[in-house]
Length: 194
Length: 175
Image 1: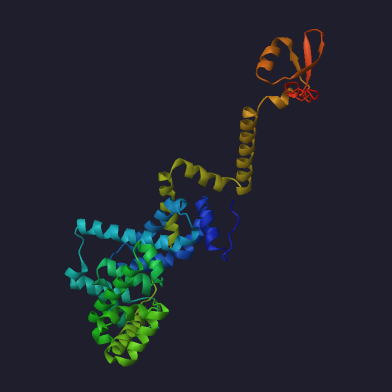
Image 2 (image 1 turned 30 degrees about the horizontal axis):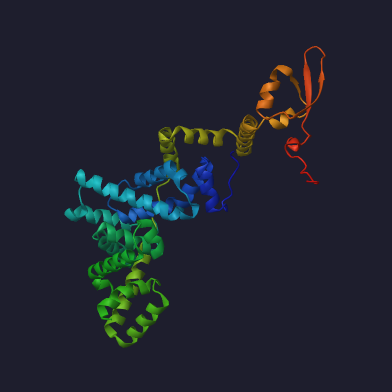
């Protein structure tokens, strides 16, 4: 069953076909979501040098468990949950092996953040790159819970309801985490918000 | 409500995540409170900053490397799922479904036949006389029509006769 799948095929159909073990549908799923997954992991942990491997690990987890996804409509929340679980797993793992933390090493921090901000787009002004650098640096200082909540909102564009579904918590908790994350970011970025 | 209480509402407000009642409350408070208006401006500016985050993409060859890892990951899948994957790769889906339907129909029919009561199959049947007693005992046979003695002793029965007719007698009308 290897007829070519059109790019316009609906997400629900792709997911159903993935659940039936269709490789081509899974390739299409990866194609659609690779940027979203990669960018999200990158923004959660720009200092990790294996973001590419972690994004692939996400898709392997998706591949192994997509047959258990009950509602295709929930795919996006489910995918985000996989990314977040992986992120927390990695934090625990890296703490155990005492990987060098950016906070402890300003030289590495500067180097990584420079790499983070030097994208492929030459048109971007120095000012824009500087704003990206300071924002990323401020986000790196947030606790994982606050960072995840604010990023799901601002980068992934999820509604509070979707974030609550993804994090399996109440909308009130989401509201509170986003509020606190913003309070901390405002503190860090005071001079850029005047 | 104090300004501190409004702060948390303001954060939801900039995200468009307040209900109509809260919106009215926030907006009427903002007209009267300069400090909260300044707070709101800061929140909008903060939201603006997120626009400067460039969308990062995976390196070239991402899917190629992923395919190799998936091939290894496939070995860890449960057996039934590997069968499913194999059939989906090797056979047209319509053929797989046709095969499953065929198994379902054959299985269903054989179960149906196994548990079907004997009565309908005895209609106009010819039964050996040695089995007669058993059949009567099981209420399968009712009224013998005739006996024939061609080779073995064979008897045929008419099931159309109402089996319980003789249980009901006409009541005495004369008394």
